Length: 315
Image 1 (cartoon, one colour):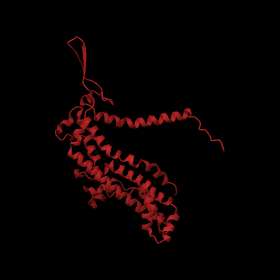
Image 2: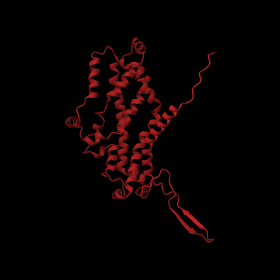
Image 3: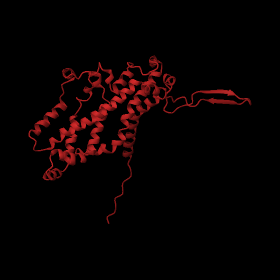
Image 4: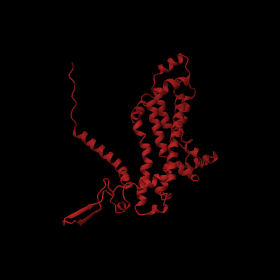
């Protein structure tokens, strides 16, 4: 038996890289923790710039009991307050936009995955006439676009302005994600398709029974990318839904809240301008808008890396 090779101990350079990566992670997480701490803080603490990640005992008073001893009266932590979340969750406009964005994200993701598969699958057939020309035309749209004003005029002629379909139809297919899907299909052995075709299976049968069952990792990966892109999308609503605020997604509503355009307190709209109160409510709105899409990551994380790497096996 050959002796097994022992792993060498970590070198100083390895520890330096680890420390750098930990520092980068801390820089990415720190803004999120700051927003969460602000949303749970008392407005007075925000005004005094005493927001802390850990609730503190700030109210301390001294008194003398009957025996003459000094007694320290401490109020239980006043640093944690949920009034901002109560205002946000009690706002019908905000919650309606949150529900609409969830439905919009689900519909857009499903249709985008379907269109991506339907675009990528035919390009894997060598028998497809003009395959190279079609591929070049598709790639051309990824590098060269018309611009905002021609796009606006086009949507106006298509009656998509102030129409909720403008949030769904234009972003059906991402060329970059379609290329990943195509590369994954090209990585599947041709023998599987050839054996199915010898048994009389047509292209749609091969796609449904062979390609799609083997494409779970890449479908989950692309679905996550489509969902995150739609959930965080705001520019299309800002440009093309100016006159239809009832169809604004959550990011557009959040933008209006941060700009002070939309009142966030359903009981007292004027209280949004109270010192410290508006900052806490804005922070709570950011957290509430961020949590739903974060809950998707743990379910699809195991597919994310494998889906991207498998899609780049074969060109």
